[in-house]
Image (cartoon, rainbow, N blue to C red):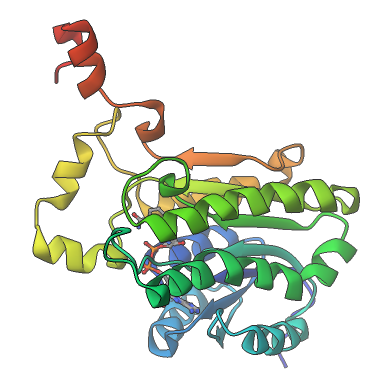
Amino acid sequence: MTDHSAKSVAVVTGAAGDIGAAICRALAPSHHIAAVDIDATALDAAVADLNALGFQASAFVCDLTDPEALSELAASVAGLGPVTVLINNAGAAASLTLHSMTAASLAKDLSLNLEAALNAFKVFETPLTECGSGCVVNIASVNGLAAFGHPAYSAAKAGLVHATKAIAVEYGKYGLRANSVAPGTVRTQAWKDRAKANPDVFNEALAWYPLKHLPEPDDIATTVAFLASRAARCITGICLPVDSGLTAGSTALPRTFTQSPDFDG
Ligand SMILES: NC(=O)c1ccc[n+]([C@@H]2O[C@H](COP(=O)([O-])OP(=O)(O)OC[C@H]3O[C@@H](n4cnc5c(N)ncnc54)[C@H](O)[C@@H]3O)[C@@H](O)[C@H]2O)c1
């Protein structure tokens, strides 16, 4: 029989995705990973990769937008041991613009990117508070901090940043910390269709980033691992951009304002 007692459990949603898989790898040395995703085939492959590296990881297929499925998930995960970490990483954008948005695409964006994260927090609330040092990290987006398109997804991510602060304030008395991370453009499968439509999409995006490189899944994962570690024990309620400087500004406007070539290149 497998001994699950040694490590506490970290629940990672969207674990079959590129950022989710990287987060699992970053947390796996110190946690038993409860890897959650709706895509059973990709999830099995992701968990097999973790197990092949010698890590404890278990797969849980779940549609996070279904509250009943979430309750069942919590009951199943409880069998692994105490949940001390919850990473709400699953996310995707349906509505491209406000003009093209429909009631259905709005509901989809809010359901996955905001409601599912809060409902997931609720189903793991008891172990996260009882352990005395629980940790929630919500993967938001730079889209939650400024208007970059995908308006309903962005509104949901902005809501997620606020919800993170609400958790931090209300549950701080239990030693529970909650933080959000706002990635910039990360080359993942979520970009597949856009990269197909425009193979130059990442180079075009790069022009707006002060650091002339884009974050990669491991950059998001190491930040999450830091926030989940004791090194971050006094950090709660923040939204940490991992965005190669995008939300600090870009060089095009200062170039216009100053007419200085110092902003070129
Ligand atoms: N890639 C980027 O440029 C970028 C930028 C900012 C923020 N983010 C955020 O990072 C997170 C991860 O994104 P990614 O780029 O790795 O995407 P991804 O598409 O690679 O992974 C997302 C995963 O979530 C899963 N998922 C979708 N709906 C689900 C549901 N209802 N129930 C359970 N699982 C579901 C998918 O199956 C997939 O495995 C998302 O929250 C995304 O909004 C990504």
